[in-house]
Length: 275
Image 1 (tube, rainbow, N blue to C red):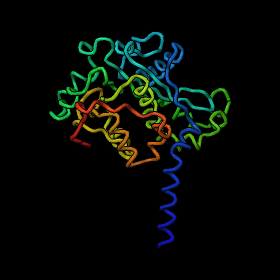
Image 2 (spheres, one colour; image 1 turned 90 degrees about the vertical axis):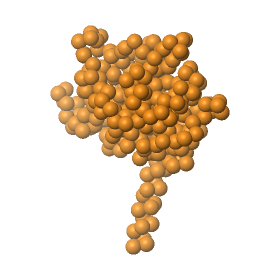
Image 3 (cartoon, rainbow, N blue to C red; image 1 turned 60 degrees about the vertical axis):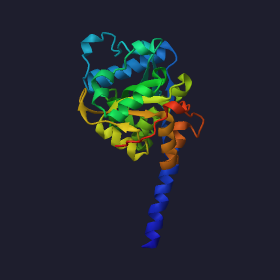
Image 4 (cartoon, helix red, strand yellow; image 1 turned 180 degrees about the horizontal axis):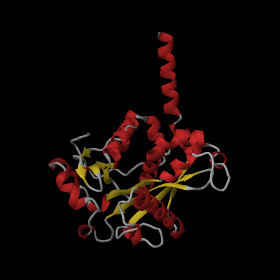
């Protein structure tokens, strides 16, 4: 029995040590800093939000690029499959823009009033120009499908095209962490200190399993499906990951290369309410 216990422990430790290695061997993070890459982001979003899970009307996007009124004051990023260069996931940060007090966030009016008073107070106290909403976090089902196919109509083997399919499947659960790495990079670049988001309950649980815990998580509500609103101080979330899962911290921060700015002491969130 002691020997078996030691083997299990070693496997767990190896898994934790390899989180960054597994992700980075299959995928890369790319910030969308050119019109061409931003168009790729919109194409991924069209595939996910108009085709895979049609929350949006595809007929509204003749160019097959899903976009909305919040995009002009947003920054965007992609997760790429290294071997093929395919865009497999996308995310954006919606910021307050040039007129913070006059600009809303996508989830603000519907979701924030349903969070408890402590969460609402924390949002009200944070400098609005330092808040960003994590939005349009999209992972392509097409890429998942390709990893599981072995033939194609063209006769070219998908298992050859995606010759790292085994590693790709192993890395799939880490795509959400890769998106968080992109979110952190964009936040550091733009001086963001607080994040809000609305996520599927399953996504909240998945992130928590990886040590990613928001300071405030609200109740399940109906918002394009069942969702949970969340708000957090970026620095406290990242520090919590470092304590709980240093392996995940290393992936998200690129081993400490990207760390969020500390908010002013007056805006520090003191009372944690992690779901």
